[in-house]
Amino acid sequence: REPVLEIRNLNVDYGLGDDAVHAVREVHLTLHRGEVLGLAGESGSGKSTLAYGATRLLPPPGVISGGQVIYHPRDGDPYDVLALTPKQLRAFRWAETSIVFQGAMNSLNPVHKVWVQLTDVIRAHTPGLSRPAQVARARELLGLVGIAADRLEAYPHQLSGGMRQRVMIAMALALEPQVVIMDEPTTALDVVMQRQILRQLVHLRERLGFSVLFITHDLSLLVEFSDRIAIMYGGRIVEEAPSGALYRDSLHPYSHGLLNSFPALRGEKRELSGIPGSPPDLRAMPSGCSFHPRCPKRFEPCDTHVPPLGPPPDVPDAATRTVACWLHPTAAPVG
Ligand code: ATP
Ligand code: MG
Image 1: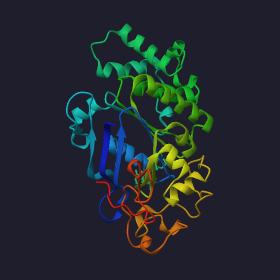
Image 2: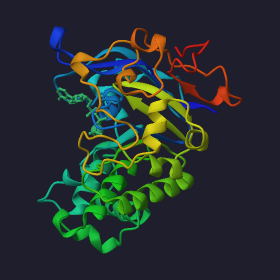
Image 3: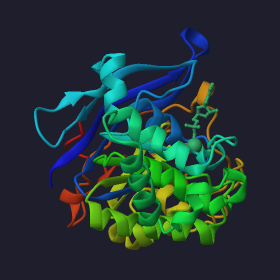
Image 4: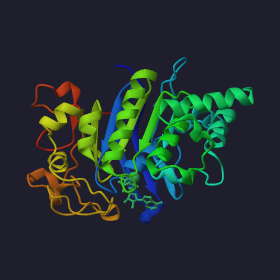
């Protein structure tokens, strides 16, 4: 399969020097054309930081301290998103890759009707379009996400949380990007609504052919709807596999624990039932594998050496998956 977005050795810090929090560490992650890739991990594992770093939307004091994000446009040569000028970046966002933020449903402008906000996005990138054509496009976009056209005249407060979320998705799809990143606000949307939204996104993906990076705490949702799943812990990807393989036969003890726990609905740092202990303090990361203090299977090398991410040596479907665990020491680290 062809890659559309390749995150290579990405490192993101908050702050500089000794006080820096290393929120994303040496992350390699590839999104392929047309696929839904799920990203899961406990609160604070670096999921949002990874998404915002890769799209250059990091808020200060976030800094990208290394890596590349190679984007493959429909036509033309691949390029590094991290090397784009601010002007190129403005053209890239929405049109090539769009992102629906965590809590985005509350980022609609309360004083403007839905149609105004939708046509703003459309107009910013296709200035020549007539007003009626812009409104027609806005209506079409709402239809795509299952919202009746009369809602164009609504103000955000007149919509339910789920509808506002779908308006945000409509905005994200407005310019037919190849990549849609959705950072799911687990805190604000209930599980039933998350499921509806993800189902709709998967359906639209089939019709329109974009790729999705879907971020959530809720691994069961990803098992159901995504093609592949990546698991993050302490700023690193610790396992990546096709959804079915991850569900049936996860290799990393952390993935295993996540699969056996209920999602933290409130997004708080709390103990997962399957995994005692709490997520690591990024300012004082454990040595070796950062999961080792909580790992039921730790042994000799785990507290001294960081296990590299790569294909496991000992499973039949090794070519389709990677893991960073000394139980399955890879012979071919990624990157
Ligand atoms: P959640 O599931 O709660 O959304 P997450 O996996 O998206 O969590 P991030 O928001 O990426 O996690 O945060 C990763 C780490 O970076 C956390 O330890 C967090 O405290 C830290 N962090 C995030 N934003 C900032 C900031 N603006 N300044 C300093 N540290 C930050
Ligand atoms: Mg987040």
